[in-house]
Image (cartoon, rainbow, N blue to C red; front, side, top):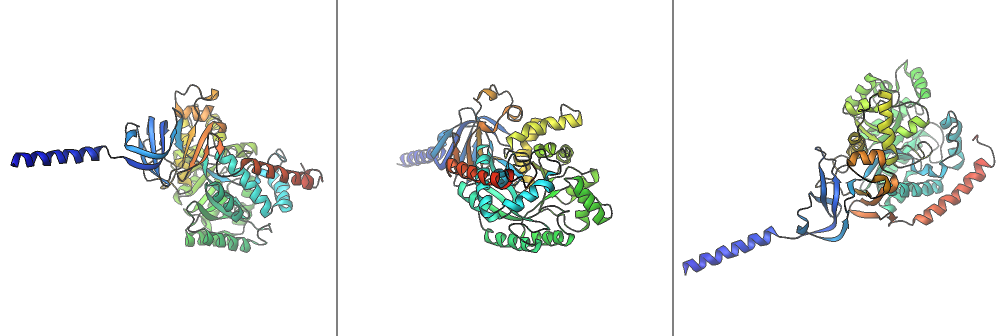
Amino acid sequence: MLKKTLLAASLATLSLSSASAFAIENVDLLIKNGQILTMDREKTIFDNGLIAIRDNKIVAVTDGSDINEYKSVKTIDADGDIVMPGLINTHTHASMTVFRSLADDVPDRLHRYIFPLEKKLVSREMVRIGAQLGNVEMVKGGVTTYADMYYFEDEVAKTVDQIGMRAILGETIIQFPVASAKTPEDGIKYAEKLIHEYKDHPRITMAFAPHGPYTNSTETLQTIAKLSMKYDVPVMMHLAESDREREVIAKRSGGLSPVKYMESIGALNENLVAAHVIDANEEDIAILKKYDVGIAHNMSANIKSAKGVSPALQMFNDGLRIGLGTDGPMSGNTLSTIDEFNQVAKVHKLVNKDRAAMPPKNVIEMATIGAARALHMEDKVGSLEVGKLADVIVIDTKAPNMVPVYNPYSALVYSAYATNVKHTIVDGKVIMENRNVLTVNEDSIRKEALQFADKVRQTVIESGEIVQ
């Protein structure tokens, strides 16, 4: 009798162990058979890997051998395509899509053309229409998170919410009257209102966005820096971008560089994301690192404007928080971070006269986890790791321009087009599948943008009131 009891107990234990070993885990989404670039600390790659997503989080990233342990509501078979973190655009002005291709080669374009253009045409309607178009462009190019600075950012937020992206949205503050604020003080109040309204939003963070140090007073910059610490929100600003900025700041501060001036007035802190940083020497770079400032590197916009090449290579090598940005669609003309890859790699090789400079792996880092670090979001996004938010893209490797793929980083940087993005997933939700955006009507958005373009033509081009 004792032997029978022991045998029964052993069988029961074995049965429970077997059941436990083969327990099926329910998830919402599986991505299988992909070449997974995790962008984790070790840059782990799984050649035939698996990602499991439940709700909005990644619950597994594996070599795929455990695929039978998961049961999913939806499965995407990557079929050998590249699976990677969603791209993060660290600096743009998305609503300016409706002004794209105007006066591209006009000298002193910002002050001579863009500011007068905005004075005539910026409105809530313009911001909404332009942001909708920009969002579609970014989703189709694999951008899942972006940092934006413009006017009426609550309108941008509505479009971000609708399409399902993630964003940091900064209300622009500038010293002269603009559509959303008559004074810098009004701009600050506007930004504060939005910060309070969106403080609990899961995908949208509101921020302050002083246009630049030379287009705001010392007092305004100091107030914004203090408020950013009070509310613990980002500050986005153009910094060390132009000769005009350097001249104005040197005159104001007794010869300081823009970076040194910002330090001297107490306006540098870890909440700041500085866009461009072209005109920066080693001392400036050391100061930015000291204050843990994020850097948005916008190669195509910088070289198109002939302002110079940012010392981004040195900043990356020195361990600063630096990520890629596109700037606005009047500057770099596209909102595709993928379009930046090739230029970032090649131009830094050229200016440093070093073919080995800025290797593809580093460029992809700056587009993903590096960009997340620049925005102080690296604990949430930027890599494919368990516990992180499920922002994932799939890149088609069967398109002619991507065949063959010997090195996935090289293929992405030197061969890929934005149109190679096949699927885009944000917060665990598929918002583009097989190039079809699922959350908004792309045709309607395009049609409305074209209708607004007719208004731009009538107001600006045909009237001849603003130089082309």
